[in-house]
Image 1 (cartoon, rainbow, N blue to C red):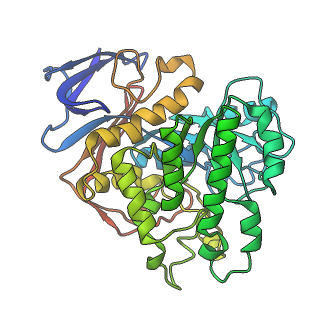
Image 2 (image 1 turned 90 degrees about the horizontal axis):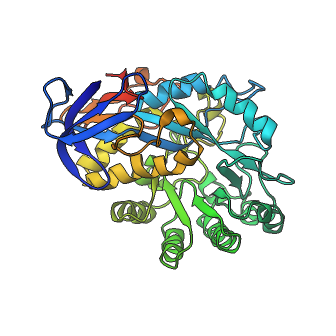
Length: 414
């Protein structure tokens, strides 16, 4: 039996305790208050021990074609995740060979098994697709983004989505007609305006409610649209939403001629008022997931104006900012970074993970993210593990650091 001890944080409580786990199965066997002598102790004054963080929205790029492995692959994405204090991820389907049926899904999923952490695979929904024979999470792009798996009209989308009634579907909310009408605007931010996200939100909520979907709205950026999500939650619609670190930290007034290509993403940076609304909603519990939308592109591609930000390497460092600078509660961090990501992937996990991720309880996987709040970290380019080789947080000093990362009881980073 192996054990670690320290200041333990869950979505429900905080206590000084010991977690025992089986080093062979990688499953937790006991959790108790107090520090056992034989346990590996993490300083209770400096460190916080969370259930392993999960990022349920990344783009690892690898598929059977191998065409985009120069951007990222399952091994480099895993390295970036561990570097960022993340113990499991969920990978999006906009690949050259998208996973849209049993065969293509199984082929991509098999490639992910070489990773040292768990990678859950989304299946794609596109024109003429049908549900898989097994239970998987799905992703739909309501309008064009990066890749070819998207819809051109809402009518086309609804015709397909009704086949997925009752399924777990995540939506990239940008209205295709508004995007088409705005494509002549002078800036990327105006070519993908707030109105596109807000109208798409209305339609996504309509689909979720009508077809009894378990819905998730991805990388949400609009303060006005967020109010629609909150209202839907209050009336019992099964909807959750994500927010990215960049939408909680940056806003479009920071954009310059020199940096705008590096901050180009879909949906784009919004106004400072939007950022502030999102941050307050995050603190108040209306936002369910901190998810990066990690979209690694090469430096050469970013200079050409490709959308997408590489930010998996800084996930947990950003969490230290939320705790120390924005005073987000520790229980809220455990909820959005550990518990709810676990709840999202647990139905799809192999049996080897026991009850799954996100909880520090008997029978769950011994995944831990341990943060040190007394050691600031200046994030440098040479610290990046993603193949992309760049980060929007280069040279930024975070108020804390990553002390250790465990997956199935194995220490992966220190």
